[in-house]
Length: 498
Image 1 (tube, rainbow, N blue to C red):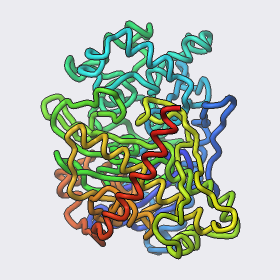
Image 2: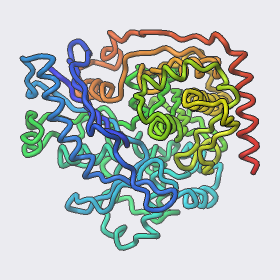
Image 3: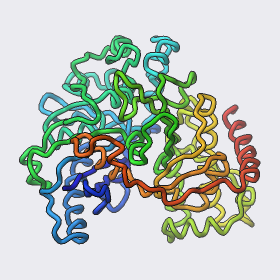
Image 4: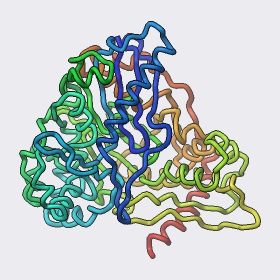
């Protein structure tokens, strides 16, 4: 028996097949081969087509079957028993009564709705918004929907249901539209104190509650695979979608981070530190955000405190395209490792991917400082970029420490920037926190989540009974990196003042 995990990223769609009995990945693929574009019609905008995601899921599923057959000639796709979905958080998807898409999705890094969120925060009242929503409305899905209401009123009137990206993919698979408290909380629609969709948000923005889908648990049956879709995907009709979660809560699940005090990190397109607590806590300045975790229930608080830095891996990708034209990431990492810590004075600030929450939604732009045209090489740039990303994590972690998150170890998947010794060492030494690396991945986590939701595993502990750490990286040069970080931070704060 197999489990299928689908991860709807902004760069790629990733699919993994997991053997339910061993919890081991059988095959994984991503589609397309090159990164998806983000459409930016105006400065600060970021959109993608939900129908493109769906087309790529279909292509990716066929590619996955081919990969699985190479691993096991006896593989039969009809043995897949359940489907789980992870997705890029905070995106806005809207459909009419016939489930037709009304416009491209306004995705997570789009900045157009910042002012809508600020006005809502003031109107609702800061204390009330934070104590009930655990966040400012900020630049999240509710504020994006408000932008549509004001700027595209005819389209807004056609909305039958609004949803997040994972809800859309589940709809295409099953024909049913559901949501979860976790999804509503990440959109800043959920009132944690009253345990309902926020009347304050609905009243302020003028949203009708009918546009929200039916609310279910994250681990539950969100619909069964339609026959026509099953035929296209070469799957058995009727298999259930039993798990849906935003990418960061799902990445935490994939690292078995479910209980209070446990902390996960990811360093993909964006960078995230995600810690789990059991109280309705929040940052008073809303620089880090609190959402319902995948195992949150109305009777058992599990709140994920999320630090998100938009500009992390996307900087590394940009550097590769612009400077490392003839390099792959492994070659970049080797070149970076040839440069001493501090990059001989070159500093890079990675904040070039939209409004950054840690700076109260300011748009700083990525910046280079201290370039010596007679000294610095491509390798220096590779090194300084990864150090700058690690220092951005330290800056954000210090905000989380102000909010009583004090990790002594952080779990991370052995992937993306954590494949680099330069980044990993800069991260642990700048933060002063050890990192435990695992073979974990979002699409595998979604597959295991499907197994939990389908009852194939009696609980989450059973789904991770064979989960093993592959390496622990301890801080070894914390004083050197702390000094480098303080220099970096000093220049950053001068930029913030101006």
